[in-house]
Length: 426
Image (cartoon, rainbow, N blue to C red; front, side, top):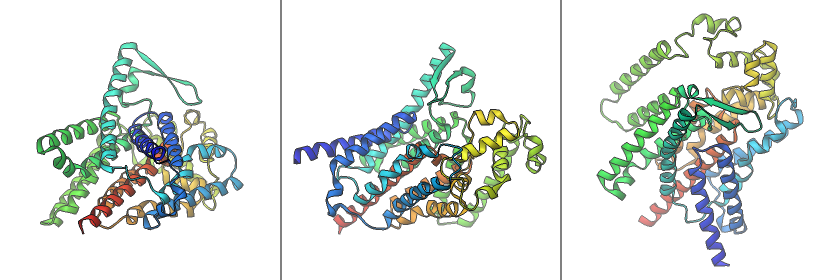
């Protein structure tokens, strides 16, 4: 029995390493890795031992996720059935397992530093894999990629002008790269202790350069600017002398960057005040920012969903009706959603759910020990994803939910490791 349990623990930990390594890869690979890892966790049967239960503040995010799942189930009662409500267990499969996993924890083999290093290396390697794919497309003119249940996608070389990876959602891929950058900074002292100064510096700056290049190559400048802003925030939290002067300079520089983007960014420089104030007159203007049109259509009849929502899985169907009404058929064909997670939650579950979601999301770091690496990691993770969710509905996709659950679990392992180290030093 002990030998069996030992092998199951090894398999569970190994599959978790495979899971985090699969994050930069296509959705189906990551989803299957999550399922296999969850099965190995169940086979370990930690839930049969009451001593494994770990009640505390770190359970709050898990309980909220469970409450969110129940709310989604209830919304099926009043949902309009114009979308994919019946498939929501497939989209949010992680929510079924995570509260139980968080309650009973993971085995003692989990080393958060090794997990973080595997994740960083996988993100770095993904850049070279996608560059090879670009080279392949350049030589063979086009590549055919199956798009889930939909038609095959033919990506010609010109498609790569602004997108590095056609087989991974751009915002989610960039979010994974952004978390890798955060973990790189969290581990910078550990690298020096383990490898020495020069090897640590070589790995740190080499990985940082590749990750930032990959983010830039995807065309997601918003992610790059978010990371720069988070870096400035981290620096501001550490400085002690001339803090007011330095913060003022950073704020002025940030405003200057925003103005420069407004004038120079290809998507923004043609956006005028008239387009923002008279959106309905510019629906068919090629220079119009698609997200502005989407948000305008979504907010036109907010009374349809603000009280109790449309029901889980119905936001895209509702938006499809809006696109069809104004003859934006290409938006409907592309199945564009709300492109804003907060608006998406409001549309599907109502205004109250959106407010609770915001409180939960930005309150997650407070569930971890004060002044700990776990809290700092969760703070930057929450801010990175929270800012990205202003322009995309990441948690409406299973990748975004698995990201959130996995990094919450990583932060929990991190907090537990810090607590054990503090107790051993006493």
